[in-house]
Image (cartoon, rainbow, N blue to C red; front, side, top):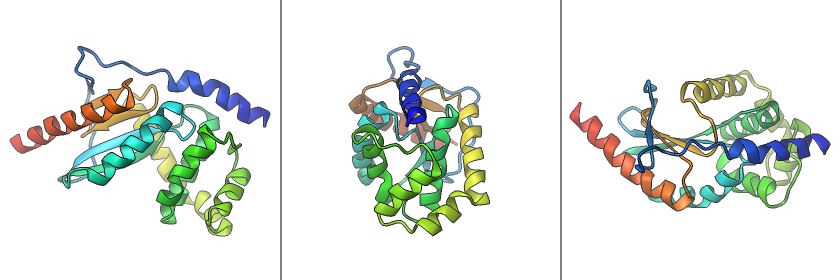
Length: 205
């Protein structure tokens, strides 16, 4: 529990290191641009952490936005690791994703961290939590410790570095545009604007 409290203590500091956009546009340009994996669709990445209060406040708006997003847009979530205490949640995210159960626990994990103050600081506590939410603990443990999940966590760390992520939540659009440091409603508004810019740029090529 003490370790969990230490995680929470540094959490506010790490989540608050937002890089406010320059020039009032609400976004910054990423240099150099990063490759995308969305094919013909405009790629939207949310770099997040379940225990980040700013991510928690953005979450319901982004969830509603996802339901109505344009068909030529693909949203992907990237669990962010700024210290060792955040790593178990990245493993949890990818383990649940591999089991096809990420979506059903996405809300519950945000609530556990930000409302219920549940200690999810290690695999054992996390396994107990997901089991209470209908996930087979044996299957979860196998996925959590699998090579594929470990590889995705490594990839997530690489993306945090290459995208220059300094705080959560941060949204990257098409590997070129970074949105961070805004209030939730403004984040969604700027996201829609930047998608139009990215779409127009794609159409020119």
